[in-house]
Image (tube, rainbow, N blue to C red):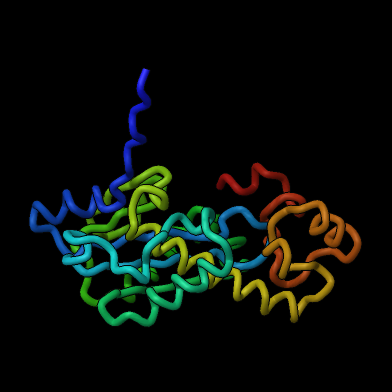
Length: 220
């Protein structure tokens, strides 16, 4: 039997549907760093021009995708394009480990998302959210599971959040050289867990996370 062509993904599908209903501007929002044992959670929000939603991304953004599917060099390149192009509106926010411990990672993530959105001008008429609904968000929203691979707006936000957090973890690697933050970015790798066992936690470790506390303490 003849092979059928693979269906291409329209990563402006959700933005286009909103635009047809005259809902604009449309922001995508995403986070980076929910899972690590150390460091902040970062979030970003991005608004692309309506004409790009209608006509497609410019050449310099060709290949934009979920940040986890990109190399570090690709993420850095897209970060520069998104943050320096005046046609694109963006906001970036972080919430540090002490705030994560004082609340919980879900609330801290939503706080970072809302702070990133608050930086946008113009104010978005609708927000595409990676993952589940954000109850504290004051804008109309559409939650999209795996949205960073389904929406260019969310993908761009994922790149900004990821690069921002990675750069911060590189800074912390210089400040706290015993833990190897430049390599694992705070995630619970065997090398990181061994460093914690050897040296104990440093100021940017999340004390509410295992192995410092039981996993149940994260579900407040």
